[in-house]
Length: 335
Image 1 (cartoon, rainbow, N blue to C red):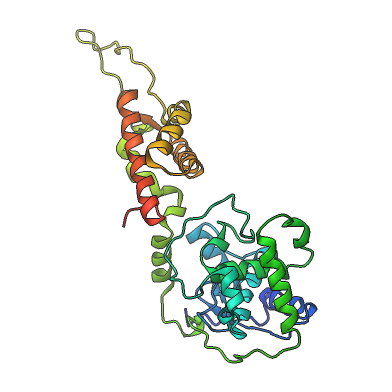
Image 2 (spheres, rainbow, N blue to C red; image 1 turned 90 degrees about the vertical axis):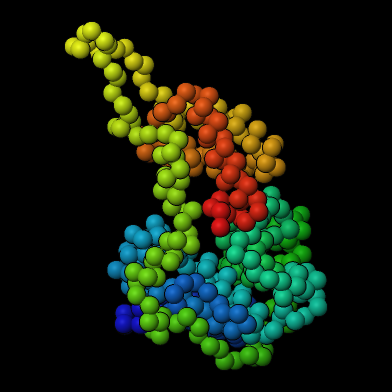
């Protein structure tokens, strides 16, 4: 990675960073967090500096990221700006040590809370703003602040109207007041260490993507394939009907193989209700999982190899295992 000879300067990222600075200045803030190329989007803990993924600095690297990870996070200007505003929330929090304020802790929670590898969220909660995907504000108090700051900073977000009657509005009003107090003030911490800086990482791209793919395995379409192929079989591999005894020229009548996707759709409602009831998991989680599995069965053109009742029992058992893993670890894959 350190041999790529890339930088922010002279690329479209430079314009995005400058736009971030203008947005801060329009709010009366003189803070300009330094940005550098890192292995991913990040703001090192308590360091007022923003890391931008290296792959956004060159079109070929962006294409490689797309090929390996199915998406390149932040590869459009709008997406990049959303992420920059979020990371800027972390940076300004650290630069002025806002997380040490008692009122900050009363509103967002304790900054010292441990960061877990995964988190559970409440999709209908109005106590949190919605900026990035996956209800990221619910991950940690630091993320809650950064997401709320990002909404506040976004031009023409009309947050006063959008979050009217939401408990999250109190958080936005607090940030509005807090930032007005910081107007024209120099940050308390003016230097920062650029951890995981791309130009210093002696990490091969192959190793980088192998680790990244393993960590994000559940986001790939083939995540369930191995287990689905233990329950179903591709239609192209479905055994041919046997010939009738005494007449080798005449095939024995055989019913068409039962397709997996239509079978699951047929029983989806009862599976959804039963699985949610007995596992205690939210219906939206179970429903999303069923959608993923049905879609994958369709893509692989899978058919049943057992009777309908046996197949449904196997599939229900598999989904139950996934849901129980998710309940206790936040991931469908057991550790």
